[in-house]
Image (cartoon, rainbow, N blue to C red; front, side):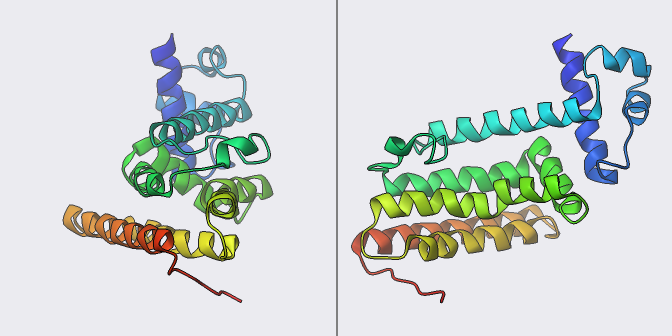
Length: 209
């Protein structure tokens, strides 16, 4: 039962990423799996329920990566104490794990493609894109820097830290070889390590105004 449910979920996301959320029906998903629509409804009652299951999968993976790298798992408004005394060194492997997740994990890659195309057509997907790959990330980093770095503008630091991640994410899919893709990841790692090293030494200041 669980295997069938997972297969439905993965197939639905693959179709959503290719055709857009509105461009895929439950019947399309069932047909791709050689199921009847009624058989699919045993597991998911609607496309919206499928989307909610996809979001839960992404949230679970987000929490797992955060937990593995010992950084806050929840927004600061939900658990402000978890943002106190964060080891900034942990941000480097955390950010690299997220980059690899968004570029190498098939489920996350297809979810990213879905958000990218749908953000221009549907407000809900635009909000999801910002949550996962835009202002939500900036806010998360800003809260960490505000609690753990003194004397600098936390928002400017967050934008500077994340900007190359966002740029390279857009470049990753068009790279022609694995070697070229790996070079992007190494470039990101150099940026992250240099950023944190200079920040901890107190000689990293930015001004984006």
